[in-house]
Image 1 (cartoon, rainbow, N blue to C red):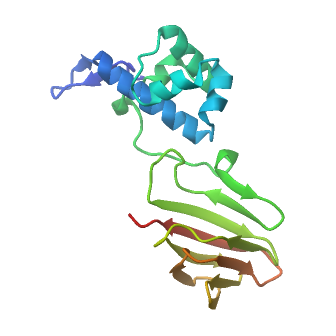
Image 2 (image 1 turned 90 degrees about the vertical axis):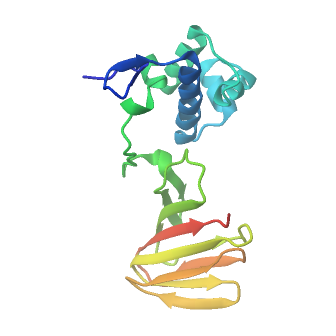
Length: 205
């Protein structure tokens, strides 16, 4: 049985009513999370639901308490039920799943490579996790990131050349490398077949 989205559980296990401030806080977090998951800008969401960008911005910051009509329009834009938009944290699973077929998480796809994000899009994070598929002869060339940023790369399949600034190394299946990315850096598939890599980007706090 689904939990009542406007209820929370007390220490005795009995449901307790959420205060208006708690409901508003949940709504602001939920709208922002759903928008980020879909890769939408505020303008995109505004166009989809007919609510002004400024109002949406205020809702996400918890500075506005939208009317029922506005909340319904936002839920319809996301294609979810109204109750799901204001669900309580306890009624939401702590497990976040990124399905292999979900193209929302395809960061890049072209003749050189395909990059899939493996970390949730809505998180404010200092770490990013990617799956990279480099086609035969393909390369992933990047400009310098923020100062102090590093990447950790593991090769699952294929052979690659890794360039970081003036430094170069060759990597094969099972090899891992840590390197600076606050300098120009490039990952090159030196083989004819596909190379599969797992890439973790760590930003300095």
